[in-house]
Image (cartoon, rainbow, N blue to C red; front, side, top):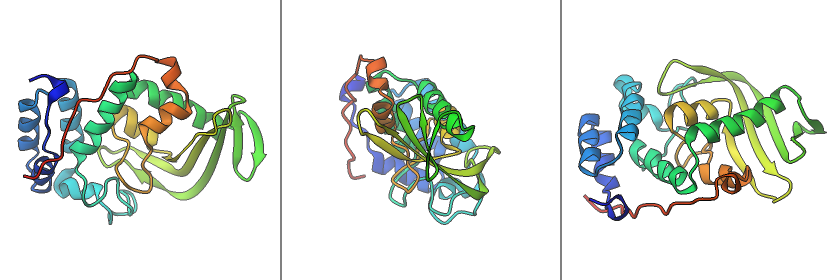
Length: 218
């Protein structure tokens, strides 16, 4: 089946995830002809969820997981990961390229390598206004044993006026290692907004149209 004309039943896959049937999800992905690399990444992610399964990503987790959740109650991990995967493909940007770019900017703010503007704001590279708020505690990755300090960021491109928030100390790790930008929750960091704010759409001008997919009833 041509990937461009694929119809994906996200609701049915979400039901499989809720039931803990991740093997069923993987088998379903294979029937859609989804790339082996993406399937392997998904399999790696779900293997780290443990006995809690998909609930580990939903609101109400322990402090070291996420009280606000990594995905909302009506989302599934596959649909969140896959839609963002398609966005990256459309812009011709890899998850590694995007994560490295924004983490470099945030690191400069953390190290004070820029102009301090006051009120926890820094001008980085003469172009990006970064807000950085540091909190107590830490944030654990839901997919592995990595733990990160508590910090919240936003990046504004002062030339274009575009801004993206939802970034935390764990964001680069989630994007680069897990292809995960979080779902419809407080700390989602939208890859399309990041690409536009960082003007990576100009660095990588070739865009591919997203495959057509529909959320059909089961």
